[in-house]
Length: 261
Image 1 (tube, rainbow, N blue to C red):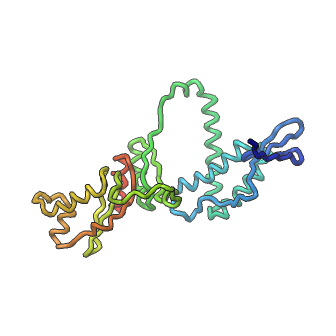
Image 2 (cartoon, rainbow, N blue to C red):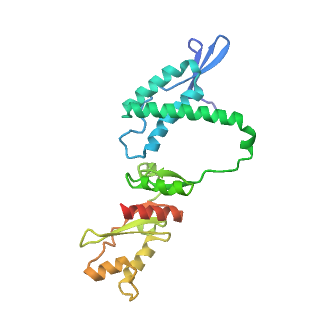
Image 3 (cartoon, one colour):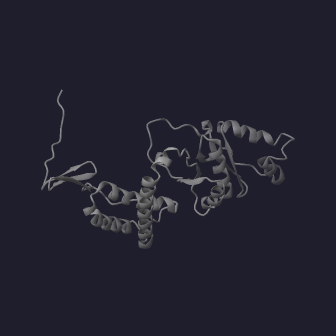
């Protein structure tokens, strides 16, 4: 069996390896950031429907890559290129500078704390607890005040995921067989709709909705109330799946957000 190998020779004392360029200069090895010629310079657009924390994270990620992987003599040039790339992706200049300054100060404080409190940090067993919510602009941000009061950190989950764009070879599960979902049922006679969540299969939950109209104990069932009060019918054949989440608390939170929306 024979294998295929690629041989790359150094040029002026430098060679590219993974995401860095390795220089041998004055008997020392120095590193610089390397981007392939095919690099498009495309990052998360500032106009995209993502929380501001995700956009600041793009700036911080690019800055950390420069500070941690490149030798200080390359920092100025790399940061200038980073700023130019971010501007091309729609990022405001003041946001770029503010985020860079805050990140550098944060890293400096972290270094000082590490050096002064190394022994204390060994005994620090505290962990950050995160509360994850689906991101819907101008709605999900309202959870911040709640989480801060309860010593939680909030994390946003984008609604558009790669698995909704990139399809696998597996057969798609029939909508009626899906479980652990947040779903929506539209009324056929007006603009009203019902949003609910269930851990069971959709077809099982729909049977309960349909049978509720013939049950005398439907005072708390809003679907039955709407059908009986207005003599309307719901579109049982076209149920919308709004979110899929196996954990109840996250699924319950997602349901509340969609009801509010």
